Length: 318
Image 1: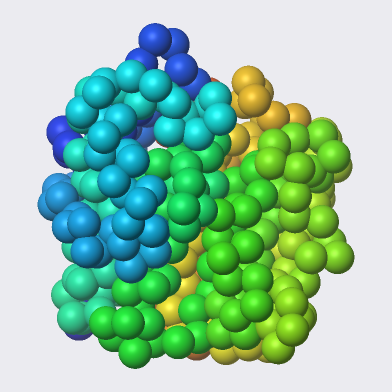
Image 2 (image 1 turned 180 degrees about the horizontal axis):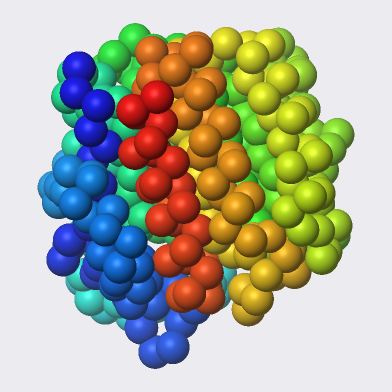
């Protein structure tokens, strides 16, 4: 197996972004990429572009009715995919399918032994449910990866680790009663922020109780607060010994994000990525995929995501 990390960027992925001054605009990939080049990480990662996911692949997670609705709104070119946060635009279906396609192409590379790790800055769309979009998220690429790992590759025990400032409700609730989907989600307390979920008492249901770890953070929490609770994530993952790790590393938890109130620096993202690479090497044959998630201050997302990418690169060399 090579030690290379595969980084997914390109024109198709850059089209996933909403127009008319929307916080999730189409300029986010470019902001990330300029910093990648500045740091020279573009020469240390292997670059790859997306492919369009097929309808059948998308429907591993999503309902056919919802996929049809997105297709119709994409053709129409306007309207709302959800209740008001996620507008349709011409080509939104193809852009969303490219996000899923990058995730699946990356998964194929990891599972074939072509690389240990992949990073997809335009991805991690963790609010979309099986039958609906939400919170700037049309198709849930992480959900498709989880269901593909099970249906295609037979990998059952998967860890989903989310440090986006918003609770990953589109992953938590579809798998709330699934004892082999191990969740660790650190986010701003839902009393203060969308989607208002992810309380510490939400630990999974039925046979899955205890397999889900939600850690709500108070507004203004910073790096030291993050480092302190991170040890609970490490213990949680070690306890359940996942075979594969999916990381959603939203940068909207950094100080200065316009939509949230936490005050991390990129050091939090570097710390989490370094730790997860070590755990992947220890528990999961080195297998980890990273997804950008949220982040609406362009300077913040550029620094946080490149901190993750750098740790992924160095983690393959350890």
